[in-house]
Image (cartoon, rainbow, N blue to C red):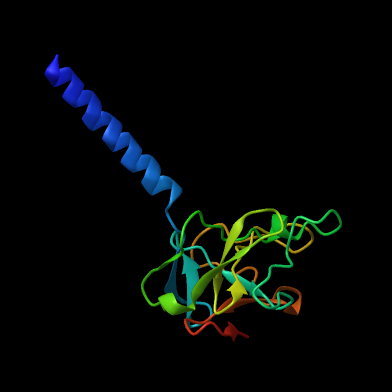
Length: 153
């Protein structure tokens, strides 16, 4: 009986630790060399390219799921459930977050809210695998970022 109780306690502790790690895990931002640009850019932990929107000001995202433009459908935000984490080549001091109007917490880098490019909405095809930069210079408002947090134009 003691052995069964000990096993149950260990299992419960493992489940609790896993749940805690899941709910407090932060999105990872790292760098990768982009062959098309011949420059190092910011990417998410999964290697997908990250973009900034020049219309965003003061670290606030203006790309929302508004009824007219559906911006966040073409440009989904990089969201986090915990403090964002700096991967290779990223300065942790430049990472931050901003609260979105939809309640989500979006990762920022040097006060630029970060987005992926899914495409559609008349903007062409989106990024579907690491290394793609289909959203680069879209409508002259969307840019990839350097490790210093500057738009690469």
